Image (cartoon, rainbow, N blue to C red; front, side, top):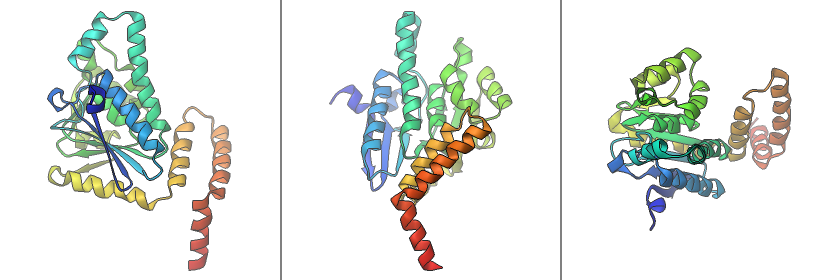
Length: 256
């Protein structure tokens, strides 16, 4: 099995596709193989009609510590073209996470820093253990968290975003929830069971309705009020014609 195969472990449990970053000795630091493994695993989950939700977690004590040392050395030594290709690969991952029709959930234990914090916040939902730590320390080495800033700005207020990316401090899971980076914080000792209970809830939801909702929510970014409403009309009509909606209405009418 190649490194690309080993760096992200993939398994399906019922309707849940579980992707585990598998570089615990490197605190699951991002490198080319791991990013490639995430992209291929996300495509695999998206193509599986039985999957209702994707969960991304990290092996060992931390979720993801950002770029590894070899990747940082590659940045320092690389040409403009090489650095552009490297950055574009990460961009493709973030775009893909929004294109996957089912919810993508980050299950964060330990540290989620720099690109790792960006990876977590790029997910549709972030679930954190009470011991989790989040932060963007790039500024301390003269780097700019440019792509993850795009995602951060859509999660938190402008002033919170500015503070996080210019001071480079780590914040707790509780603070991250207060800021809007995290959806739910669960006790450390119950984290795995709490995450499982949470994501299993998607199995009860209409897959087509969730997919249409996710697409519309992100499509509205940058639209005018009128254009967003018109797009809403189009999605509303599409939803009415789906099998899930037709069956749901029939069940509701039968009850009443």
